[in-house]
Image 1 (spheres, rainbow, N blue to C red):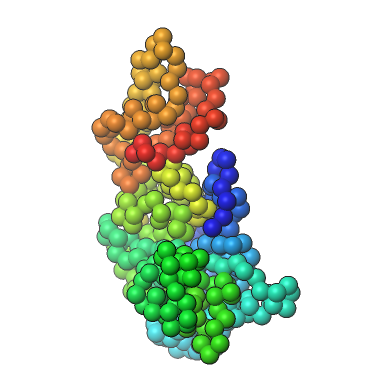
Image 2 (image 1 turned 90 degrees about the vertical axis):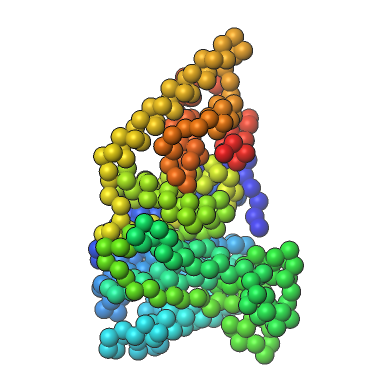
Length: 386
């Protein structure tokens, strides 16, 4: 869904914070899409006496940004204030009761949005996926509704990741068909690419079926993972604009390598978005990176390797340009393709050459200050080079 721009909008929205032994950084970028439909939430210290709890989420809107925006402003309150969630906190929090309270919050906000949209101007046709984590002193509650994704890195590897809710998944397909719908070209009724989402009320009108039995369900999948002090490293929450071009292990390895060269989580988040853009992502992109005390620390050796890599790339770009000689200055695409054909040591795992595009472009522009590459959109992508 959605049209594309002639050039991507690469301006970023950033934020960061710390508390409850956590640090976070986030970044979002419109990219190639005509509109920005993503939203996010980051709260350390929750209401209703949950000072030691934290909540983070990414919302990937479609057919408009209204639902994503409303959820980023109100979903947390719907979760923490509903009676099911409140009853779970009367004594020591019960994991299953907390999970049920989170589920109730999703169902409540979905019904509330339907009511207010009908009162104002008819049914709002926008929808949004939601992926989040609620972190208590003892547990991490992964919350997923749709095809955005969250993962936990523990002990140097991917320990857990959420499952995407796609119409082609057997259980999702069964629900869709039981509601009188079909799955065509891996979409609900040949149109919507996700089988669970908030909003999307055009797909929630089957009489005689409850909210979780509709063509599109607002019910989240909630998984509770006991925290492991010292072993837990970081959590990544991201929309499908990231996962379209980076596999779980690739992104995990890339983040780990970046944390060894900087402790600036906004910078790491920005590098994720730029790398995914150059790998070919055409969607809006949002990522939240949450680090535990056990996250990788800056390593002098890694910083040195990074500096040596940047210096090597700068020298190679200069060599490639000079090699052309009388043939004139090669365009940036030629430089990229040449580098992609070479075996370059110490490229960031997962990101590879795409993650170094800014370094390559900077030295190219320095050597050719009057050359314009605006006419070739392929220059903005590494797809096909890497």
